[in-house]
Amino acid sequence: MPFILVPTPIGNRDDITLRAVEVMKSADRIACEDTRHSGPLLSHLGITGKPLISLHEHNEQRRLPELIEAARSGETIAVISDAGMPGVSDPGYRLVQACLENDIPFEVLPGPSAVLTALIGSGFPCHAFHFHGFLSVKKGKRLAAMEAGLEAEGTTIFFESPHRIVSTLEVLAGAHPDARCCVARELTKKFETYHRGTAGELLEQFRSHPPKGEIVFLITGK
Image (tube, rainbow, N blue to C red; front, side, top):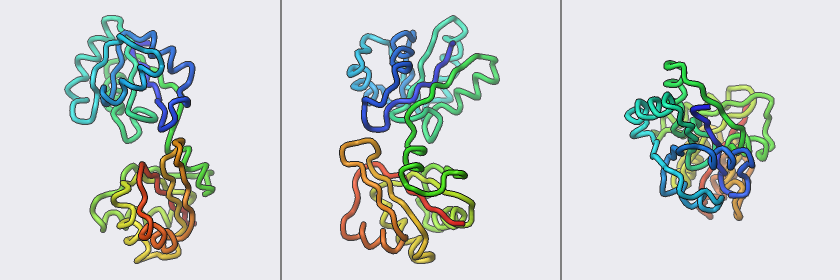
């Protein structure tokens, strides 16, 4: 298979699958979102001396012709992001589109996902859910996105910066203080935590103790 999209751990390195390791070991090269970030993981897995190529949001479009040509010449290329599933708020979508347009086979491996981990751990409804990536830096757009989530069936999931989560809770609590929320932090890592409550309650908590680390923010409405 010319291209194989390989999920990588979102925190705990032991969450890598045996199949993912085998694919990366046997690939001709590995396309990484950040070669400096992926290097330690590959070394930890005993994958050394493998040609690495950077593939991130700023160069993905420019790299595509080179990667497509390599695939046509018979190479197998493993594609990984810094954490989780390539293509989900990470590079990979344009590559998949290029494969479809050029009739190049590709395969997607199952594996770690911050979105699904946070959804199940939140305790919120998971029969229907919506993922919207990172919330806007603009407060008006942030509120509009969260209000849409409150009106939607099931659970709505966002990524958010630890430096902006207090501001986001202020925006939501100002309009909907009783909105049910969950802040899932540092998933699968040593200091993983889930904070559940209303927007007003979580705002009070995080004002006193600003959070650190990577955050998944969930809200549930109807």
